[in-house]
Length: 426
Ligand SMILES: Cc1cc2nc3c(=O)[nH]c(=O)nc-3n(C[C@H](O)[C@H](O)[C@H](O)COP(=O)(O)OP(=O)(O)OC[C@H]3O[C@@H](n4cnc5c(N)ncnc54)[C@H](O)[C@@H]3O)c2cc1C
Image (cartoon, rainbow, N blue to C red; front, top):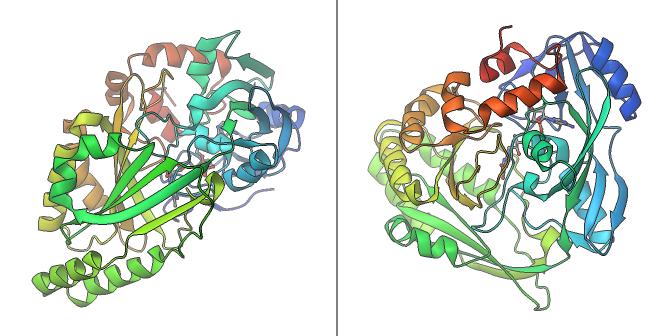
């Protein structure tokens, strides 16, 4: 079946010759071998970069979902790679397991989340791929291959973050933890205090992150810690209402920037603090309705405050159209070859731009700041880097590319975008 495909924000579109939904790994292998190239696998299409774009074949793994098996002693679960995180949370909770951490939403497929090193926040918490115990991959020749951490740790480290270019994950075994409860607190503070106390505040909690509200001078800090207390109601979230207000002030007061700033600051200072206890699966994810495009870079942890201060100054001087909060998180170092957290405790900074407007002038202006501080781009979010730049940022780049060639000798997974990223002659 041919058709049209678009990512979540609508920025990336494709008209592949074929969109295929295999029902098992065998059928997946047949399609990889015979369908029009390039063969790109989609998760939930929540990446902002053209990772999934193909005029050959786009694979949907919507039929490859659900629990395969679980081990209650080791808290391990094997799931099909098309399983969405929202479904995975309930599958795990039902067998007494929990994901140690999550990002901002639960809409991604686990295969897609792994593919771009999707992460949450927490100085000692790794991104999803750090939970991998084993992977089943269908390679570029259509062969089903299995790698486990105990037998071949290098192959787990090589293929755990792989942008859909090292074969298609059909099943993954993940190391989880016993179900748990979190106390989540949110409060507002001046950004100057946040930047001054950045290292201690981010390190003081199991998970901590903050949003800077542009043109306000204030940040909202969010801290989550383990708790044995009884659950309390999670306050109704009104992030969408707040965004609408920020957009109205941006548009209505374009010619009165000082009034805009005063009104935003007044409103942010009045945002009530939150404090509640809930089971893990009711805490992490939010519902994001307003479409945006996003750039996120992963910096050496200690560079976070300086980089953010420069980004705020640039934005407030030159980009009055920006109203989306900037998001700042921390992520633990890991050993995965194409992980942006490779051997580096990280501060991740994300900037967003309304999907109705061209994001590129803003992104192009901010990117040099990220790069100056040694940032590695989030694979699923906007950036302009190509193979020559990326090779310098990833010490095991050449080894990763050698593994890729072995898994996909005929470049079945290589689209023009992937060729630029990996330095492969189209
Ligand atoms: C509203 C919103 C909120 C977000 N929040 C966060 C966040 O909190 N933290 C964060 O880190 N990111 C976040 N992201 C980015 C998002 O998590 C990543 O881009 C993620 O990769 C998207 O998952 P997906 O299932 O949509 O995959 P897709 O975008 O469809 O695919 C991503 C990559 O994975 C590959 N892939 C997909 N399935 C497989 C498979 N089975 N085998 C091999 N490769 C595969 C694809 O080929 C592609 O290269 C957010 C994005 C949006 C739109």
